[in-house]
Amino acid sequence: MATNATDQVIAKAHESPPPAPTHTRAAIGEFVRNYRTLIVVGLLLVLPLFIPVDEQYNANLWAAMAIMALSVVVVTGGSGQVTLGHAGLMAVGAYGAAIASTKLDLPQPLPLFVALGAATLVGTLLAFVCLRLNGIYLAVVTLAFGWAVPELVMRFEGLTDGYRGLFPGPIMIGDTEITSGLPGVYFGVIGVIIAFVLASNMLGNWSGLNVLAVKQSEILAGAFGVVPARQRIWAFVVSSFLAGLGGYIYTFSVGAVTPSSFTFDNSIAFLSAAVIGGVVSPIGALIGAAFVSVVPNLLASSPEVASIAYGVLLFAALGLRSAFRQFSFAGFRKKKSKKGTGL
Image 1 (cartoon, rainbow, N blue to C red):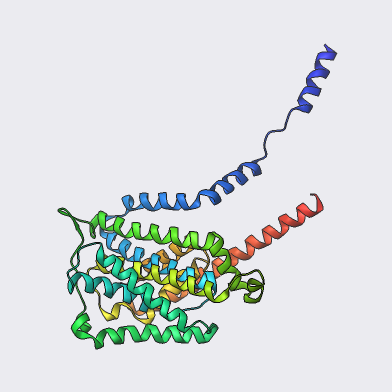
Image 2 (cartoon, rainbow, N blue to C red; image 1 turned 120 degrees about the vertical axis):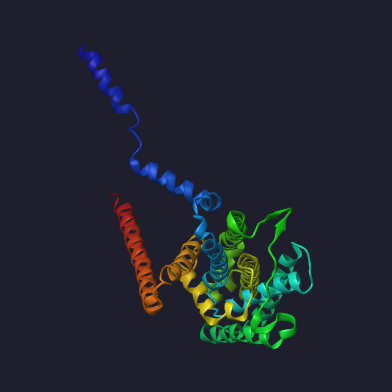
């Protein structure tokens, strides 16, 4: 009897211990990191089913805002180029699509190609102009570009209808209108998915690593064979492409394009959405876009306090994000120190 008890104790001692809860959390975290793009895409495809009918129009506005925030993430978060003229790039794409649809009477999806091509071409030219600029100088030039586009739109009244704007018709597939109601929400969500996948790949593959290397140090990036000018232009081209996509989605979701839709305030809103989300995070850009597009609508019933309340909430969101990052970094540093001491 004593021998059997001893053998059982020895056998239990040699058994592998049950996995610690931290192993499970680590496995879940690794799964989320590896498949986060698929997870986000899945959530984006499911969430429209739970949006109330009276909020579907706001969902379309969020889609356009999210695409523009992702555009800013690529150029500002990726390469460190602070731009204040993304509303101008969005206007180029929006008016390109509207003119192709109303003035040229082109069938779908040709207006989409016009919007993408026009915004990408203008963005590429702007990137070459700003190639040797950085910091405040780049911000000033892009700000001037953002101011110039609406003025040019009003100058060419015969093409853009000036202040009145353009009113393209809805996109139809058979007898079904896909730019309003639940199909309209999915119309915007598909655009967000395309922009999210492009931005995630841009910042996650070798091209994104090269762009991030240029952002950190051009000298060190050049020492490893990375051409800083090429990477900055590449980031601006991809960002302009996404801005054209955002302009197209906005044009056919709202059904109207006017110069007042692309002001300096819009550029600040796009930048704010990207900053709230962490500047370099495509997922954060989606969350920041929700904040920037939803909060003003909630405060619209009280215009006298809307601006103040929105500013307070914006600073609160930025403060919480900064506090969370510091808390996460402190926890990471504490964990590393424990590993170093063998605890």
